[in-house]
Amino acid sequence: MLMTKERPRSNRTLRGWAIHLLQEAGAIHECEEHGWAKDRADPHARERAFETARQDHPGSVSADEAVAEVRDVLDSIGDTCPECPPDR
Image (tube, rainbow, N blue to C red; front, side, top):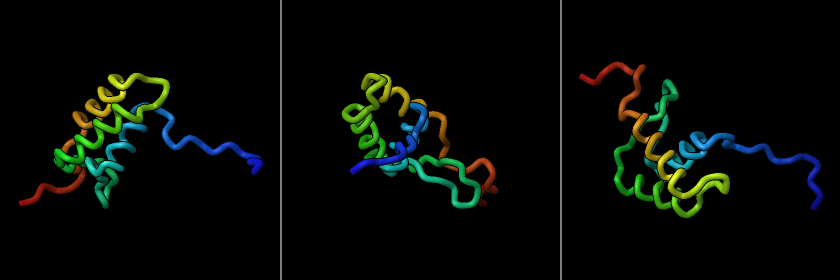
């Protein structure tokens, strides 16, 4: 089958790839109201994400670099949305 257009790349950066991977693994999710990423604090989902990063990383980076980026993204995401009012 001949394709006339190239498929657009969904994740153009390593950080975008890591965020997508964490969402797919269930380690992070989006605030429904504001769109901020929130950590689910699920150790099994985190381990799935790290294992996937080790085994199925982008070809332009090493497995160690992929795991480090996933770790950096997780470290930058909190478990609450900064725009949502605190629960009382």
